[in-house]
Image 1 (spheres, rainbow over the protein chains, first blue to last red):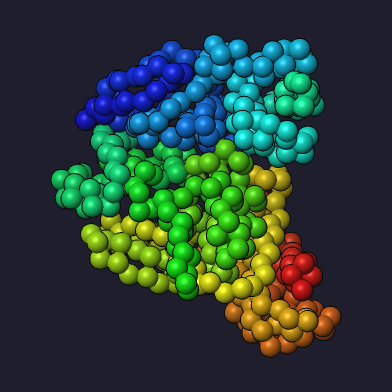
Image 2 (tube, each protein chain N blue to C red):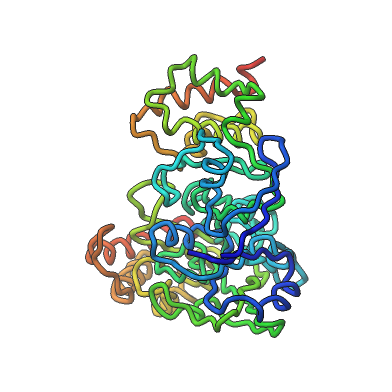
Length: 155
Length: 279
């Protein structure tokens, strides 16, 4: 097995690691970097629990090989926590978290949406989060929590 | 599982290194099909070649007569591109129906074609737009109609190491509509997909192309239906005739998503809706 020298930036830190070529990005983030906020749900891209930001775009890390992230900037839920992202507080205040397993994926997706469209409507929020599943079915409060972080609400 | 993974930034680099790489290899672009297979243990190649950052595959450009869409451009980018909106409205209309927005950040049109799924939304829109695919093997290029690359469910006609470089769409003003019948909105595989591209003036159909997905072994061009509609006025009688014809032209199966008869019936219903929107 030929190891791959992966160079990327994770949560603002430059990383250089030799990795196994069969590692997915999800496995690299969780196992090699110990950032376990990114979850594995379905492994097929249908639940969104594994979302991370790759160069600002939310991607399903279970469907990417780690080597594909070479030269890219990755932000995980831990990165958003460290920068005190308002979405995290909003999810807590609006009681949008039940078991919590899906929440990192929801927050990552919402962060992508609001970075691009800070005044997203409720319909745009719903559309954006359509690829994230919550088995506890707490969608109403999740959408409310994202809505509270819109530009007009923060003023 | 892959023993080797290599990343490339240009086609020149790829062709140069290719002879030294393991023969059992797969090309990795968006990964939304290949890595699902890998995670499920279905796909097990010795070598993955990451072509997602190859420059030539990530361009959208135009000349006087055509638009070129790189095979590696992410669908999310295509959904925001002004050239696509203007000249390939079928694809622009199709993108929001294509899986979730996070998967659209990863998935590519090249992968959609290479995967050869009967339900490929992007291929359906490209075929309806009369796109040609540009193939490249060690720098030798050839182009052919998009649907000619499809040989059956999950079977394509690509030669070993032949890369899908991109798609060429003729610049011709027309209207387009893409409709998809699906259980979970914005997600998953459709029961029926239909894309209609047409040049219609005062209800007279100067040109039309009807393409369907999920109702045949491959994405399928409904030629008989299109020929009924072409050079006709869109009267209730003609629409009904076309709707009856399309039901006989398709060859759906019953599976976990839908029943054969329902799919056949809905082809007619969706065609009528599409013609109503587009007229």
